[in-house]
Image (cartoon, rainbow, N blue to C red; front, side):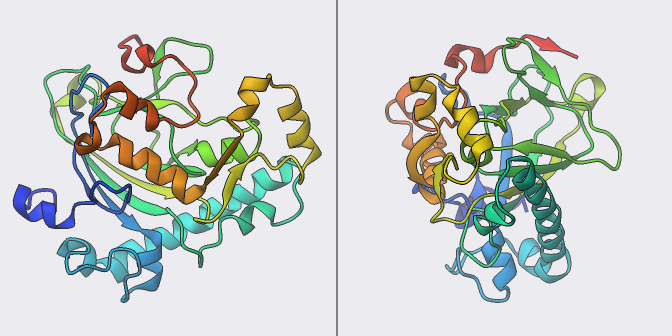
Length: 297
């Protein structure tokens, strides 16, 4: 589907209004240099409502390879991803001292949300330091990544050295995103990460990945659940005044996601660095380090 040609792929383009679902071209970091990744996002809401579509309802919803495999491939993947996601959410719920089911009430599968399945293709490149995906935190609650090649890097808290995450056979990688970080008052950290071409000889091959992004229901207000958990209240109380502001966004999950998607778009990059800053989430490291090439294996 990524080989359809530019004109055909544009029919499935996600657009510039902040909607994530659909085909996403390469994005632009602060220096204007495009990354090397193509993306197709499939809305959880469209998968669960199939054969009706509730999010991408135009004539050009998704490429034919997606539609033809919606029932037998895409839907089982989304359902299993939701099952795994819900199990992790329930564990976090208990560890955070919340009443039974509190977090799940914010992640109900039958409510509209930004949850999506994503397939990514990173082109093969001769440069081992050419960014495939620039530094970022994820928008939502949990991201479950499936891939067989290297390239994913994380920036540990307090460090300026990027470290590779080694793929392990029959394992997935799970990242905590902004929403859980905010709801938990920072107890759960939203992981800052990026993607480079696979190291060593793997760089000669395309890198394919499959991800499921779990995000709260669209109407969920992103603020720390201090009134629901003494554990969260105590954690937030220890933060300074400026840090506390990050955990009461005043935004819904939908607004948070749309802002970040909209301002990462190359077509919307009319104010350079200001647009890039507006696409940021809970990360608090200096922007200059986002494109640092210091790496530890």
